[in-house]
Amino acid sequence: MGLALEYYLGQVEIEAARLAEVARLGGAAAVPSCPGWTVETVVRHVAQVYLHKVEILRRGELPDPWPPAELEARDAAELYAEAVTAIVEALTAAGPDRPVWTFSPADRTSGFWFRRMAMETVVHRVDAELAHDVLTPLDTELALDGIDELLYPNLAGPWWEEGDTGYPVDATVRITAGGRWWTVRLDATSVAVGQGAEGDAAAEVFGEPSAVYLWLWGRLGDDAVQFAGDAEVLRGFRGRLAESTQ
Image (cartoon, rainbow, N blue to C red; front, side):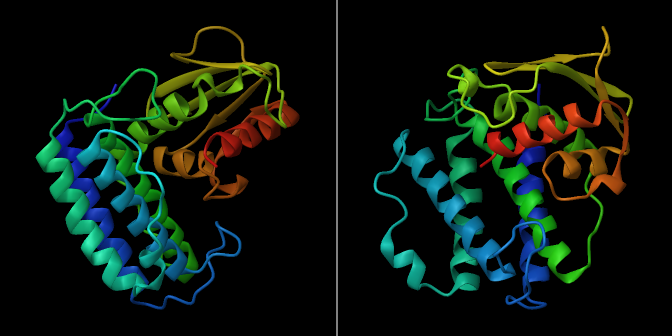
């Protein structure tokens, strides 16, 4: 599932511009959603993520070593501006079908990175906005698609086969947003995601799409959404989400 690549590319440009705008309010502001980070840290991080993906799109494989030492010496705002241009150009040149490295077992094409870069950008735009208390809404279509992407491949990938988790929750969680449902079945060694609301769930999360998406990413607190069912299951579920996105 996913949206048109042109839509993702447009969202990268829109969200990247908003991040730059908020960063100009002050790079030293602390980011509450990323303890220890400032807005300047966020800007530098996103710039390096973009440039890393430019290299993947160019080479087809992971660049090693990464990052180049000279990036740390660059002015964060200047580096970011260059990186935004570079990632838009690289995605446009690659198109949807170039074989490249990705972390998704189901998609090893350049098209994967259109969606991933849109989501990367919007989440970190929110980080910068939270630092300055100027949070603006997410595009509803992007938020719903972002829930899809966060649940698979991020959460429901093959990362759990060795039981490598601090949250070995064994339960089903249902997520409801924007007239859509996701049913997530977790145990210590696997996560499976289904579309729809079939079957029983030990716990449920529901709310407006943007709020649910940002709660899943740990960018909003529990007061942003609503819950039903087993609170311990929800704690374990959110812990597992955090592990899957580190």
